[in-house]
Amino acid sequence: MPKPIVAVVGRPNVGKSTLVNRLAEAREAIVHESRGVTRDRSYHEADWNGREFVIIDTGGIESEKSDDVFAPRIRQQALAAANEADVILFVVDGRTGATEEDEEVARILRRTDKPVFLLVNKLDNPEREEAVWDFWSLGVGEPRALSALHGHGTGDLLDEVVACFPEEVDESALYPEGVCNLAIIGRPNVGKSSLVNRICGDERSIVSDVAGTTRDAVDVMVEHDGELFRIVDTAGMRKRSAVTEDVEYYSMVRGLRAIDQADLCLLVLDSSEGMTEQDQKIATMAIERGCGLVVLLNKWDLLKNQEQAREDCLMSVDRRLDFAPWAPRLRISALTGRSVDKIWDLVAQVRANRCRQVPTSEVNNLLQRLRETGHTAIEGKKRLRLMYGTQTATAPPVFALFCNHPEVADDNYRRYLENRFREAFDFEGTPIRLRFRRKD
Ligand code: GDP
Ligand code: GDP
Image 1 (cartoon, protein in one colour):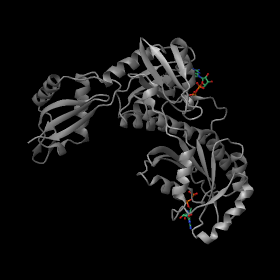
Image 2 (cartoon, protein in one colour; image 1 turned 180 degrees about the horizontal axis):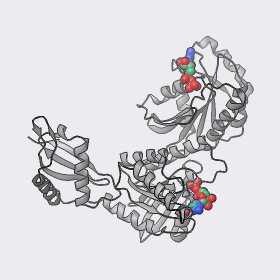
Image 3 (tube, rainbow, N blue to C red; image 1 turned 45 degrees about the vertical axis):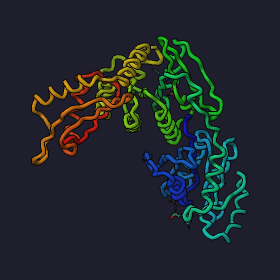
Image 4 (spheres, protein in one colour; image 1 turned 60 degrees about the horizontal axis):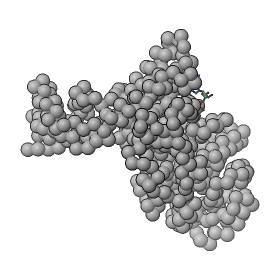
């Protein structure tokens, strides 16, 4: 099941990032930064007593203190958290008392039915704790004293936060074995829900509202050609009227969570916009996690008779995906239905490629041919010689290559070799891993 999202909100300098670092330190935080124009946001993976979750630090709003710039930003941040997160940590500064901006945030958080924790930070000395009483006036529940700097209070806080999460379900019991998990991801408004609707309209679909998962997480099960597919974490696709930068950030985090659970990732782009940096990040994550990757250039209908725009779009994908030229691209229109039926064939193909087991004899035939070309990696007096190899895993495919000097295999050589593997065996759409092992 997807990891719950904990959002940390509050005005600048109250100690949000200090707190996040504290909370995330249980495990080395994996920080995926997405820089906005005037602020940073970060995404951390954390766990507490074995329960994994995601923390979003909605970030410092940099110091243009003019109220008319500041207020709308903090409102948006709080609104996005209220709508998108599972639990909200609202941080205030115990040394300054409640400010107008705090009240602004509180007004929004009072309207959400999500759990909100009001954290009065910077109370480093226990005797200062009466300072929390001031904050009852915000009307978002009991204020609690905290020192993010010293860390006291954070353990108890995490206990309570985790207790608010939906109960964990054993997914293996819920889904039939052999189901292929698909993540359909992309930025808001690129057409993900239209696509899911179309896919499900054409196929027999079973919508399963899995009990115990995050309130609105609805998985869609689709059967195609006798095989079962589960579209994971479709909650990220529900309609939103105004998409702000903050909402877009949550949407990316949701995409990342979906990737965690997916075998294949269908990255949906809006062809009129091409591939963005955020799309590139998502693709990178998918590949790092061993997911198959298919790029769907949606809204292709909008580029009708626009030769230049089509070219620009394809170029942007080539450029941003230069590290994964093997990911297939399909031009589709969820609106008109163009090529949507081809998605299934592609998915089936990529899935087969990702699960392909290449016989050891074929791997060694390839290595033999490569030795004959004479091309290899050389460092000083060391000349890399691949002796033999074998595939040690599938989904994604992993090859162990036994050689004399594994350390000589640099990035260039790895790319060269990966390309030869891809030419020899069909690995379209799947990452593959080459592991060099010493054999004297
Ligand atoms: P953010 O803008 O809300 O993310 O705030 P930061 O985490 O960057 O913290 C702002 C400043 O407050 C930094 O100088 C921190 O060292 C300080 N700070 C954060 N938490 C505490 C705390 O619990 N006690 C004290 N004394 N200072 C803190
Ligand atoms: P999501 O936020 O990614 O789920 O995007 P939606 O499915 O809600 O689509 C956003 C908007 O794009 C809607 O107005 C759709 O009608 C429109 N849209 C989706 N797919 C296409 C397409 O292939 N072509 C065109 N022209 N519009 C599309």
